[in-house]
Image (cartoon, rainbow, N blue to C red; front, side, top):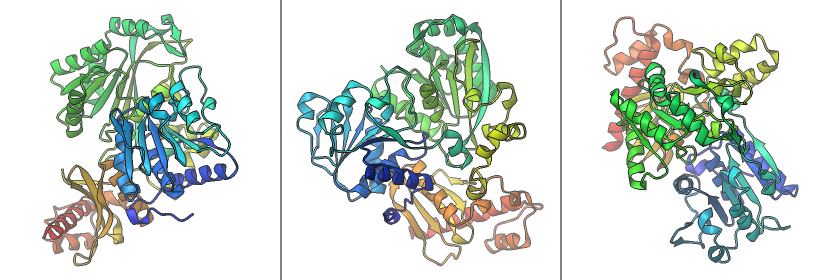
Length: 530
C-alpha cells in the first residue's frame, strides 16, 4: 500500500509503518481486535489516523476524556484534511461524518448506542481502559465481537492494567509493540535523568488494594513524612529552573506542596479533579508559557495532557503499578526544541517486600549506579558488565545516529535547525499552531513547505526532524556532534563575513554555525513577509 502522507508533509516513521503493516497483516489473517502499543510521545494518534485514512470508509474513534477527543481532531487536519469529522459528546451528536470522535461515556448510553452504526472500523484510544463494561457494551453493539463485524484497533502506551481485569476480554492480541527504552535510544523521545529521594517511613506497613497501595494509608504516611517539604526541597535542589509536574497521593498533598514552593519564591500552582475547567485551562496555559514553572496534581494529568516542554517529573506518590508509573513519566518524555533530557525524581519510603515501581528498577539499573547519568549513559556503563543488555543498547545505533537534534531558539515565534545542503528547517508560529518550512541554502531559491497547515509544536518538530533524517544530516544536526567543538573553519568564517556577522576571536564551529543558521532563518522570514 502506498505511503499517502506525502501531500501533508507527514512522513510516517519506520516503526509507525511497521505497526500499520502488522495491523493489516493480522486483519488479513482473520484477527478482528488488536492493540498497537507505542510509548507516550511516539505518535499513536498519527498512527491511528493514518490507518483510518488508508482503510477509507468510516471510523469511530472512542476515548474517555475530552482531551483525547480534541487531540485527534487537531491532528486530523494534518493527516487527513479531506475527511469530514464529527463529535458525539454531551449535546453533540454528529454521527454522519466519515470520522466520528466519540466520548465513551456518551456513546455507550443506550439511547445513543442504538442510533450509531455503519462504521467500518473502531479505534479505541487509551485502550487499557477497554475492559470496562462501557467499552465492552459499545464494542459488542457495533459488531466488534461478531464474525465479519467492524474490526477494533486499540492504541495505548501501557498494555498492563492495575486491576485484575484482562484486556483479553476486549482484544485478541498485541499486534505491534515498541518499548520505551528503544524509543529513547533511537531518538524519538528524550533521554531520562534519574534521582531518588528517601522519605522516612516504612512502606511495608501500608496495605495493598487491587495491586497498589491503599491510598488513604499512603496519603497519611506521606503527610507524616513531610512529603510537601521534601518535594519542595527536591525541586529546588535538583530541578530548579526546569518546568515540572508533581504527582501526589492526595489533593491536600498537592495543595501543601504548591503552597510550600510558592512560599519559597517558586512559580507553582496546583489542581485537582474538582478544579473548574476554565481555571484548569488557565493554569496549564501559564505552565505552557513559563509563567508557572511547577504544577502539582492528584490523578489529573496522568492521561490526555501533552505539554512537551515539561522536563522534570516528580513522583511524590509511590506506586506498585507499572501502568500508572509509565503514564506519569510519559508526561516528560516528549521532544521539544532545546530540551536536553527529562529529570525523574522518585520520592518514597523504604520497602523490602513490596514491588515498588521506580525509574532505576524500570530500566534494570541499580539506584546507586545511575548517579547523575541519564538512562542511556548508565546502561552503556552496564553494557561493559552485562552482555545481555548490550544488544538492546547498541541495536540500530548506526542506523538512527545521535539521539538529539540541535534546535536554535531564534525567537519565541520560530525555531531553526540545519539540514546541511538541504537547507534550514524552520518551525514558524502561525496562529495557535506551527507550520514547517525549509529555507534553501541559496537565499534566492524557493522554499520547501513540509506542513502548511498549523499543527502542534510537537508534531511540527517531529516533521522537521524526520526531514533531517531523510536528508542524511543527523550527524550535522546532532546536539553532541564532535564538529561543534572544533575551531570554526575558514569556510565558516567566510560565510559569516558574507552575511556581515561579526565573528569573535576563537569562535567554535558550533557557535559559528548557529549564528549563520539564525541569520539565514531571519532573512527567509523577512523575505516571506514581503
